[in-house]
Length: 284
Image (cartoon, rainbow, N blue to C red; front, side, top):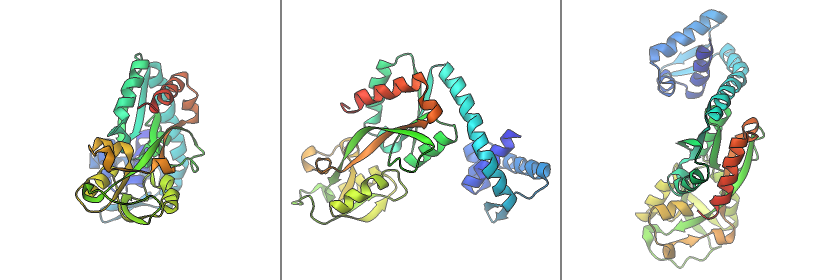
């Protein structure tokens, strides 16, 4: 029954049988059978098909709303018991962090905590938070603001400076606080909310948005416009320091946060991991 309920919850999030099957690593026929089993058990129609898309009925939505918190608690309990007992921490990390300076930081932390086994997953920050809530990840290292996350405990471990990569890597006479159009991250990202106000303060205008900071950087390199990215992304792309406009000096940084469910944050192993990250983040 739990597998069937988890399938319905996943289907409500993905909207298609195919994506649900892919995420759960089962066949589409297995997804259909699980949903049919639930409909038979509850004697209610739970989904409606609209071409390839699937929408929940009123009864389906009621069921998902009721069981989702329970399933998250069940997954969280087993994750805490099984992983922590083995000295294992499952970490979701923002893609831009894990693709730039993150691995160096985690390597130093690993040397401080040699008894801990780490499992890392690269996701966009909103997805990291969702998977922490779902009990799939134990902690997250991601970006963005913590205002709307009363259900999670969040601590800033680093402020990463934002920089501008000049279009085509051409030297520019731009001075900070002059109006400037830039390419930068799109609104659904975790980082956008934390830099939007500073962009207005610095008179930066987003004329193009992209789903990845690395894509922003590459487009700037090839001359499609000035790119606003975290410092670590520019360094990873191999851009010379003297070409970058460092906005961190003007107080434009993206916060890097350590996030966990409150019950998980209280665990000694997780607290040790948090302390090691705080200790080494600034130097990395």
